[in-house]
Length: 111
Image (cartoon, rainbow, N blue to C red; front, side):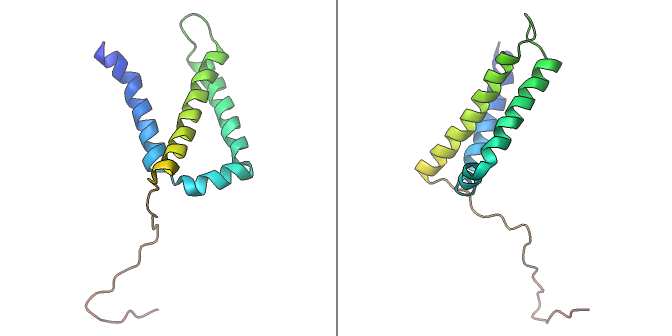
């Protein structure tokens, strides 16, 4: 029983944690407003279509059931973005190109 519940609760918790604490929604909202929402909708439709094809429900393949779950996940992500803005939990900037320390006070020679 516990393993069955944990098998779907844990991924949902991790999903929400990612969207709440790892995504900078201050930057994401403008991108979505400028047309990025179309990509989200298309990815949701394709995800539901693929999911319904490879893992149909026990009763019968039902695209609408999978689309409902995908929509719920997208709405949960958007809710996390809204919550992040209300609570001011915007993650700090990530520097992909850290400054290199040369150390020992010696100048770095460029070749």
